[in-house]
Amino acid sequence: MCIGIPMQVLALEPGHALCEGRGERRRVRTALIGEPRIGDWLLVFLDSAQERISPERAAEVNATLDLLAAAQNGGSARLDAAFALPSQLSAADLSALTGATPITETTP
Image (cartoon, rainbow, N blue to C red):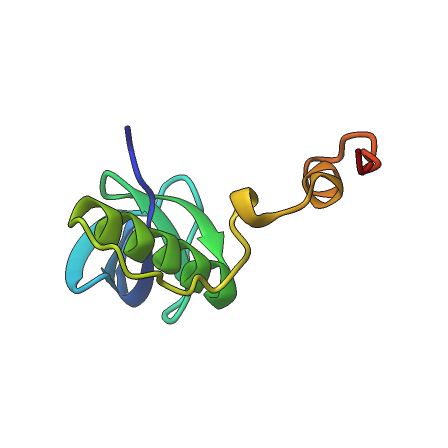
């Protein structure tokens, strides 16, 4: 499984960007996204930028990665995510999120 890491552009060179994210710096290929600007956020897979993302989306991905790291380390404390996890959404909200026909919730 490949996990995208949000990284922010610090410097540019032809075809690459020096980026920082999650406590590390990497030289990232930018061929798939065109020329980024310093300060842009990129979603990086295996040292290759796959898309530009907003700072808000970068925060969401980082929050998710923090939750995964806590789960892997046996953390039992509840961490507050910066967004609603699908498991916490109602059936109607999930339908709206996926574009499916709305489901009406009934009580037995």
